[in-house]
Image 1: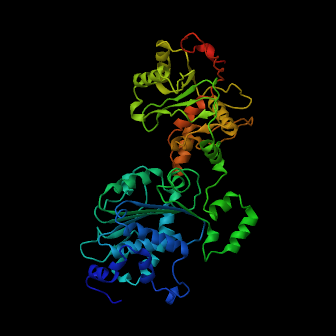
Image 2: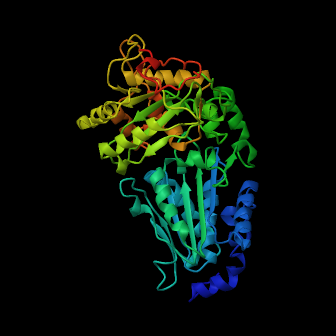
Length: 505
């Protein structure tokens, strides 16, 4: 194809028919079977299926202007980088002023793998002269449209997510592509979805990755609570033509079919080992799905993890025996927790309330807050006449110090044993993530010792994961602070609140 004076005119006349047909575009835009592509006959079957899925979404007037979200967790070597490059090339070639944003889990991934693969396919395209391919962008050669008709390779900043959010493209087409998406922090996903409210806009967001972690947005999109919203797909490398199955079988023989190496690298699944987590993902998943069991005489316990503003929440979680699901948690978001009076009054409401016809037998309150606020809240509740509340300091020595180091370690140990014994939890994403945050560290006496919260936050932040305090899990753990006696049988005579004699030290 010779150079043209007006790329826009050429695109409209030659490629407009593929506006809602990315598969047709890919088949026509690249010289399959010729030159350096002599051994390539076209997309693989999973790639064709994906391209058709986008086409069907756009071809349907009812869905065309609704966000298309697709997340693929796959094994290695299936051709996902080529697929994202085709989608980017199709987007710019068939829609005037289309914007494409491409991000990757790390800057090195973006510079050394993603950008070169995308550049290769733009160079191969039959309309390659229409594009100016740079290290950080691809621009359509149309005077005056350098800023509106382009692809940008963006690096992300967790500290300044707005800087990597890209721009809205109202009334046109916006394509957002994440390569090795598991490494992109949750805040970046959430920030970029801010553009999804634009009406009359074709919005396509695609996330590709191996699922190397069992937490975070990519895990939720492909294996967790948001699978339906994201059109999740898991692809085993062995099911894709052109992949060296013999190598995969050797890896399976070496590591075992149930090993995390095989699960992640070849099967598109998440790791089960939990990266050293004290409570691993499988325990959480089992607790989310099992049937709730609670006996009539089991007391209702409440655990309260206090916070003092910022991103951390004050959380109240409830448990009756093996049931920590039936009663929803109470969450006081960070901005409302700075005033101890507000928190005290909310907790008093909890103590005065009935939950499924039951009052709280005992409330265990995190008493390790800064500046004496935790103590003030506890003293305030006692002054109001509540005797079924007890302060617990996470940093105190464990009661069973032959097995645990601190009270926090001991309570988390009780919670882990409870999960193993059949405990049931709700599908709250925050709770599921919190339970998996702490890891074990060494103790000279071989006792259970969890990493300090400050170290945990630093470690998670470096991994690009949610590094907030595990408020939900700490609240549930507090319900294991002390054993509480079973309730007495119903009395024919009315009686008051359960007092301190309803629990045993």
